[in-house]
Length: 290
Image (tube, rainbow, N blue to C red; front, top):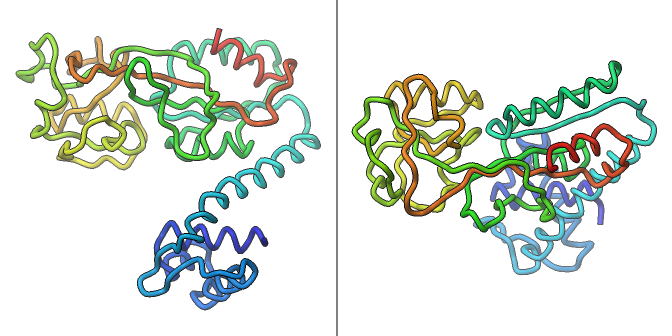
């Protein structure tokens, strides 16, 4: 199977539209149709219905394989590139709330070991960091999220199920300092279903919380943590955030979560080829998970 045809197929499957896939890939719609037809001819079975566009049972099976195949191809490319790249490079990807003082201290220690170490930090949303680490575009990935104390983070496919815990702290509801909830000893998320929330997909997305029906009064498309906390302090809505971020912050109060009990966890992902113990990525990983 041609990887280019697989990429086109995945775009059509994810967008549910030949024209939307064409826009994403900078192809014409007829070119996308021809590529899907070529892939179907190669496999000898229809993969998509046309009106409406939907996966057939065979197409659903191929979609599951395609994402893994494409990730492995990107990982192979990154691995080969790494063998010819000059030494002394470190690339770390992280989600906005994965950054903390311990991470900064570990990075400072690694950079102090080599004055010539060229370091690059990529801050992006969860899906992008998982994909970049899985394909080897970054050496390490630091991802965060909210989960029950005994559960691992739910990572998007094809996330690394061997992720290592870096830090963990209680999750709290962030409210303005003068909010009536600020005096509460604890609160249940279900009791706040009618409250207005801030949905910040790049920082703390509502859809990753274990409760449906939370209403977003404001949608924040950026990834600046200080903007999100500033919006909460100004009364634009509530947010679930790590305790360390809210406690002591100007204009904010941290209300503990009673039910469900959640923690904010940061986990470390490693690129498939980032396993040389003498490389900066391995030494940084050891410091972060010690």
